[in-house]
Image (tube, rainbow, N blue to C red; front, side, top):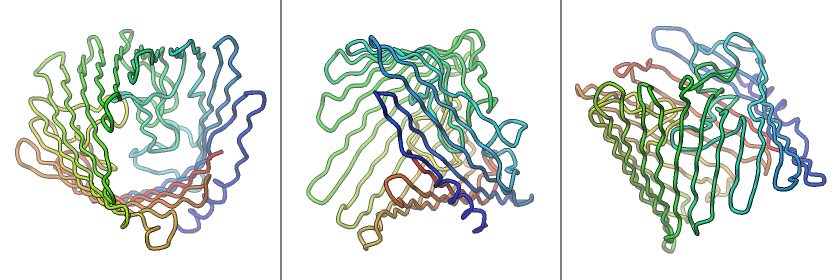
Length: 378
C-alpha cells in the first residue's frame, strides 16, 4: 500500500504554474488517490487512480467570456472498488470529459452562465469525493443588485460525475421537465447568514424541495462558536411530504487548536432526499447520510478537529467523528471516522480518511474503508 501511495504522490506533484496572460486564465489540479474497502462477509477491494482538472477561460469582451474544464482519470495499479465510489467511468479504466463548457456574461451586478458548469447549491452540488466531481448542464443567473443579498435562478438539465446516474457522460436529471432552482441568500446582519431555496422537479418522485438555513458564527477572545438551524420540506408525488429539522453547534478554543461540532437532524413523515450531490443536512459522515435513516428517524453526529500546529507540527490537522442513526423501528446504525489533512505547501495537500461502518440495519454494508488523496493545485 505504501508503494502505491508513494507512486501517487510522485505523479500528483508533476504540475505546472498557473498561466494568466492578457487575462486568459489557465488553472486546475492534479490528483492521485488510493482506496481500500474491507467489506464484511466479502473480500477486501482495492482501487486507485490519477487524474485532475484543466480549466481555461478567455478574457472578457463586452462582458462575455467562454470557459471550459477537462476532467480526466485513469487507473494506476488497482481497479476494483465494489461499485462504492466510482473513480472512473462505467465500464472503462479511464475516461475524460468536458465537465465545463460555458458562455458567461457579466452585466453590472448580474452574472449569466449557459452550459456545463460547477454548481454548489443545497440540492445540486459537486460532492467532490472521488476523482471527477458532479457538474451540471444548466442555465444559471446570479444577481447582487440588492445590498448584502444574492439571488440565484437556475434551470438544470443534465449532470455527470461521481454522484450521477451515469458517471462518465451527461444524462438528464428529470427527463424533459428538468429542475428549476430559486435561491436567496442574505448576509446583511453581522455574523449571520440566511438563505432560502426551492427546487422544482415536475412529475418526479420528489417533485419539490424547499430549504431554509441560518448560520451564526462569532468569536470571543480565545473562543470561536457557531450555531446553525435548518428546515427542509420535500414533497412527494405520491405519499406524505418529508420534513427535516436540523441543528448544529460548533465551539472551539483557538489557543489549543480544538474545534468540537455537534449536529442533529429529525426526519418526519417520509424519507429525506439529499438531491443531486452530498446534500445540505447537518448530520453526516463520510459514507452515512441522513437519507439512510428512512422516515420518522433521527441522525446525530459529533466531531472533534485538532490543529496540530499548536504543538509545533505545522499545517497538520487531525479529526475524529461519529454518526448515529436511529430508525423508526428503533434499529441503530453508526459510523466512526478518522481524518488527517496535511498541507505540504501552498499547492500540495495530502488527505486521509478511515471509516468504520456498522450500518447493515439501514442498508449500508458493514465495512472498513481507507481513502488517501494527494492534490496538487496550479
